[in-house]
Length: 493
Image 1 (cartoon, rainbow, N blue to C red):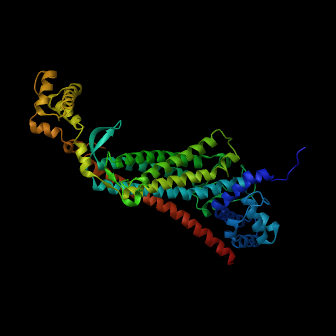
Image 2 (cartoon, helix red, strand yellow; image 1 turned 180 degrees about the vertical axis):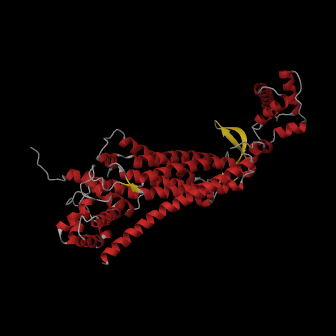
Image 3 (cartoon, rainbow, N blue to C red; image 1 turned 90 degrees about the vertical axis):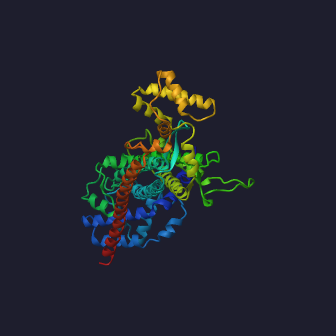
């Protein structure tokens, strides 16, 4: 018969509790203590504990040696960080009965989901700030390059002329939508579960709104069951983050290709490239490689978390708690690293504008406009104009030449039995990349008129997001100040 071990058994301590304790030391001590402070203030304000008990408990909390607690070795004498802190508070109170009143009308369940949110919301704000900085880089680059021609690619092949501003504003709009998604996730997360207790609240006359206010939440969570059982406060954030990471990965891939010598249209400064240990000529764009690698790692973590919580019970369950939360935090942190690194690298990069312009005129990528011009002049179906131009492209390719005016007229006579009413100068203009871009003034197009308008819209959105971020951060800062001042007021009598 196996020997019975008291809880925690050594195998459980070694493989679960010690790691969770170390994670709590890294992430949660300050948040545990803020929850204690806010909760005990509310208990006294509601008359659930006395003023003397409030002062005793607060003095014990304020007297804790937090730095020693961060480095304490887990010995199994208590189950977790919650009980470790409660033991230290009890020692500071000198009266276990008074210290025990701190735990009136609460549970580890609502404490845990609160401290997770307290940590995660600051990480979310940091990620949003990184996205705002990346967008600023894109906007500043776009502002310099409204007239900088470049080829647009479809199916990885040269397609049509556009501008560098148009290209970068496409990425800007992606990041703006990412910011919107992250903001919504933050707003949905910033509600306080404290007071839900185990899952059905309590019979004590607590004030959940007051605790939410003291901790800087917008409001309490509404339903106590959902406060404990719901995990969308972090899955929504991870969903928004995974969408962001897919965008960042695509951007990184673009700029890595552009940095290849075969493309040679972007150059990173020396601080963002790495030399080879054997090949003296190498300038490896490792900063962008790391963007892609870190983003892929972060995406893997988000998908791992989402997979881990899929089909778990709708209630209090360890699957979504201490073992999993650090992976959530790591995913957000790595997303922040990838976004920030991309912004820094691109902010210092230079584009080969002459080569981009040259390629905007090459590979027949302006001929869509030639076909469009024929349609407008001749009132032909586009399919006929497309066929005429396609014949010209084929002949020019076979002869390794450019399309000529005579070539166009010969193709027209073959297809419609007459010449196109287009002079040589009009023909040249129709094949001009500058003209191609300039006339595309349609909403969303690459014309400098349109990209300047789009840039102005994005700058306005950036200002609004900047104000949102300032207000969100200010509310957290004000709450920290208010909590600290409320405690000082009690302790100073």
